[in-house]
Image (cartoon, rainbow, N blue to C red; front, side, top):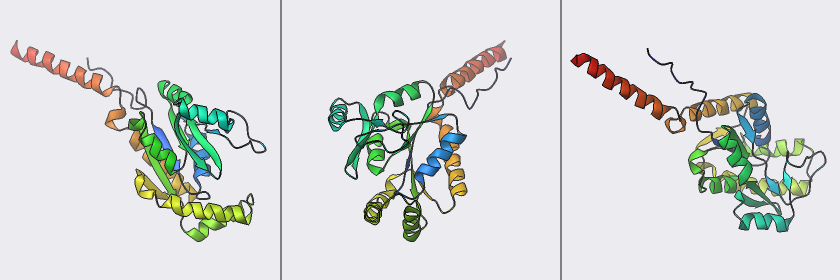
Length: 226
């Protein structure tokens, strides 16, 4: 009797899925849509030295820590990646990410190019998939920043200056998308995820299944000799 085929959605290695973009290009909105529609994903919650903003929740938006505690986490190897952004430090605690992977979840990272690079250089590099989101134009990027109504002109100018540096790192990513239409960009991210989940090296069931096939060949060859 031929055994049933493997479930392609089960028994696979999880992925560490990185979304990066300059501020205003849509990374946060795309991340929220992905988390809302794909239950296999969990969000990597960063630690930060900046104070919480109104409405933010400890452990859900960020882990808010003192600068001294953050430096101790860096020294103790507790962070997979870390970077300084606009005068504050941000980093990814290792423990929750490793726990998610052990439980078979995929982990979404909302980090900049420095964080993506450090994840690529970590001991979890084989699980990392990186996507960079570009704006359709610089004028559109500035308009998105201004339309949020959250930042002063000086802050927006700083974000635009940083955007130029961030965009210069686009070629370091596995995939690059232009967010000229949110629904289309979200759909393309879904296509990337579906393909990455099917990669040979992520399928834990594949080696046992091929071993079983070869065992069947041996049995079949034996039957032909009788």
